[in-house]
Length: 401
Image 1: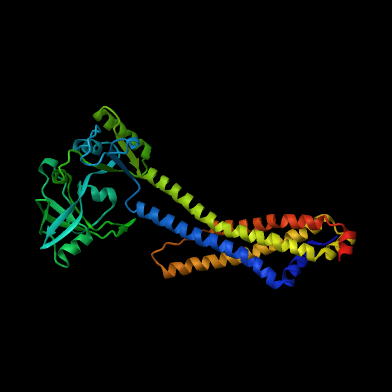
Image 2: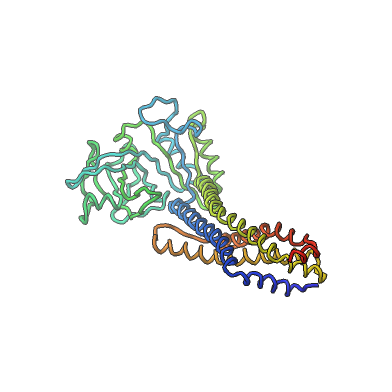
């Protein structure tokens, strides 16, 4: 009976006896594992980056837009529609609901902005005074739009950080006059820089009262209502209140409610699928490595026919012969997996150093899973050659030698 320690020594001796062949087999598995680690690290990094971009504006937010989702929401401007628009009265009714901490009614468009002798085309957003509270935005200088009745909203404007730089440079813009589409606004504040959000420059925008934006863009209704609600309150409960209130006002449910939780959950699911798909692409290299193990182990069985016959003649059980070759296959794949983990992690960090803008994150769960998959592939790849070795007849094996 061969002891487990002796079986391990025999497997390691078989690996080191053919160093080049063993190294190439290890390399096949290592490249596969490295590809899986590298691609999933990039995928997971992008996953975390996108979710962080969304959550920077808060997670307790509910959005209401005109039209049902199944009818593609609100129609583009100029196209006849039977959808009832959302109004400022609707927004004020929602603002008075329990648990609501902030409300902003939004209208937006693209317009030429003229100030300080400079002309720029940018996004002009009509918003409410609570926009800062709803989206966790701060003012860098001056103040934000004051809370005023829609009928008496003054022509004030708040600039995004980049728009301020392009229109006024280093000069103080507070109190300056800005002309937009035949209307004149006075600058009362500048927002703190927020940077890019999924490729959109949040700082290249201007903000005016919603009522003024409705007049500027000649619209009957607002394009979206965003509501923030208290921490610890379930989004489903707030959504139900919003739905019942608007349905009572409109006589039917002709609007779409989207919670930040729903958006994040859907986005997370999509990104999870993409990460797994990217990892699956890397797994193709692992399968190629598995084919390499099958080939190498088949050659090893043919080369060691005499050794197998001698072990059987000495009384070694078939299970021991099977274990020897399976152990060799698993050892090859496990060592190759470890090499791949180091290579993949190193490449991921190197790419992050060379391209800091590319987010990279390597979860320990992915590392453990990649190594387990490598070992499993080695085990599966070694089954057929090992069974063939265990079934050899001792007399035939010794005669072949």
